[in-house]
Length: 89
Image (tube, rainbow, N blue to C red; front, side):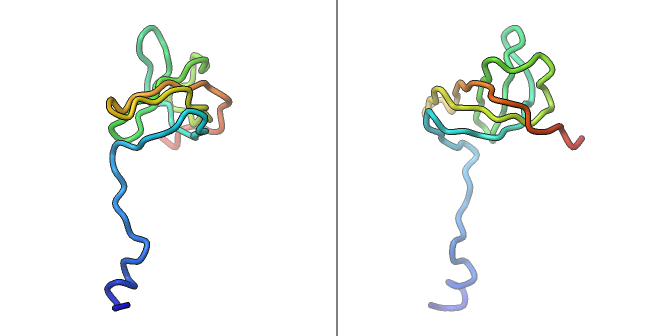
């Protein structure tokens, strides 16, 4: 293995459209709300709607269980579990 290979071992590019499976639990930042107040997290170019989030969830970190995920549209729906932190801003 060359020095170049050793230097880049384990290196990979992260896409801007991650894919998730129903049942995955994610810690995400709630970045906004849509459709009458449903919390939304934007993860790269993907969007996760968060059902059951508190009204003041925007700009907080929350745990979410993924309920459904559309890989082609990079959109999903999840269920709020709990708030785990505040924004650093």
